[in-house]
Amino acid sequence: MIRLIIVFMSFSVLTQAQKNFLQYEDVKLSRPFVSVSDFFFETNTTMTIAEVEKGAYVMYVYNDVATADYTGPKQFRHSFKVSATTMGEGFIASDPTEVQAVKLPLRPTKSISSNRLPSEKYKDGGLDILIDRKKGDKDFRKGWLGYQGDTISYNLSIENRRVYMVKVSALCDQNSWIFSPAKVEVYHKGQLLAATEIEKSLEKQEERFEIITIPIEHITLDKIEVRIIAPEFIPEWHPGAGSKPWIFLDEILIY
Image 1 (spheres, rainbow, N blue to C red):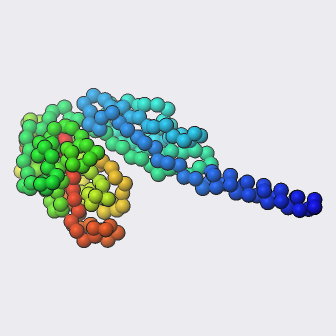
Image 2 (tube, helix red, strand yellow):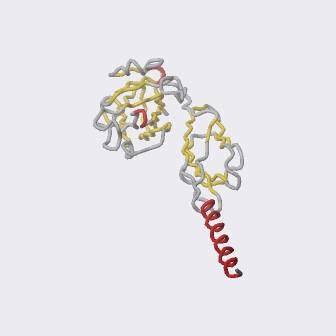
């Protein structure tokens, strides 16, 4: 009888240990919910991260360099990118949540024209929404222009000044067949000034806003051309394989 009790107790301890192990070592924490007061801002914006599970905390990487624990709302006065991860002792860290916010250039763009019209279904506000200095809605039918495949060229008129960078705001929502551009090129009077390739445009990605930055050598000008080049086809892993992907844009900013 005593031996049976000892065996039973040993089994109980082992079972409890297994439960504890499953409760901690095999539990992956949920991704943190990160929000900002304004994705496009003139003076400052505030980042807030929602409360996480008891015993967990959030660590974030700021602009791929600085690392810090989240202790409360943080105000930013410059453009930033944050990658935040929920962590906790004895748990598997969450997948990261990435958020970008952009400080607007001091001078707005005067006008914009294009070689292509957006889709009739996705032309909310027309071309002017690309220079209205406002972020598109989470619903891509509001404040976004949608194009299916190929290259879109935009000619922008600005105040004559020195320019050193262009930023393009795009959407990635692969469940809706919306992919990141494959490449963005910047021209002046037909001469290529700079280009940025988006290497992961055809890889599986979470739904997100994307800011594509194209640095250029300082040049004084009053007109600039921006070409958005779509991936040729949707990749094989996607249900829409072989079709032309959609590209959605909501702003082009010139610094």
